[in-house]
Image (cartoon, rainbow over all chains, first blue to last red):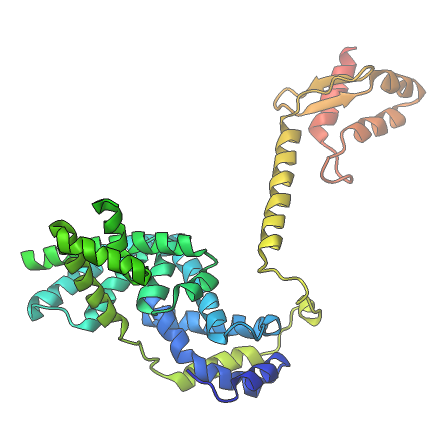
Length: 189
Length: 186
């Protein structure tokens, strides 16, 4: 995460300096993409969401308050964009298919190798996370995959601590259940 | 505290305070099912933790930066882009809920207006159209008075009473025909 001169760059970007904003993009696009990927599990969709997030950031740059970390603000934008994207009906229909298809494809690979590597595990977890509710998915990805403190999760998601913990509990239960089911299926083969 | 409550704490172990963690650890030492659950959850968490360490790397960061900057630099041709609406915080919850409330009341008002039956006003004859429930309001006394003066005025009165509620330049022709037919019968 970049640090040197970032407040100055942000101030310049706020005043409409394209060059300064480009520096901000260069510094944060990698992290923004990684977050989007954890929500969507798809490379091209994550790239699109990263682009949209920075366009939105640029358009709302004047509203930026220095007391909020830029990364927190970016997390918020990406989370909302990804959740809106996942909410679309078309996407929901796709998810039902992915559920069956992705599990079977990963199961095949897993049975060959007898155990999953961490990258495959991430894919399984991301797919399972997509089946959670928006709030559960947000809490789970930000807290467990992004390892953000609960306070920051609250700030990004707009939930209070109790709501974050409650959604986190249900999310973890569902992910655990999904992983157990998944392992049971892989060992059957 | 019973096992069910401890079960919740096991799932939310990373969110517990040091004091809560200590109490849970004491319980786990004396409760086999909770101990088993704790081991299982710890294993799942370790899998999630390992997966979380994998960071997806952007394949072509230069291309991504260029794409973003191209879109930002592209001039906007919309006429409204010349105005500064930044004072309107459209992402604000107040604006969102405010707009939703206004929309709700407008829909409710429209619905109520649509459901209204024939008007019952003294001296006004409410006559529903045959094929739908929209009322045709004819001020009988005024109409007959105007009719005696001349056909043109009566016609304009007919039009006046049949003006569309949504566009004052349009009249409901079915309404006029209906009224004409009615007054022929009188």
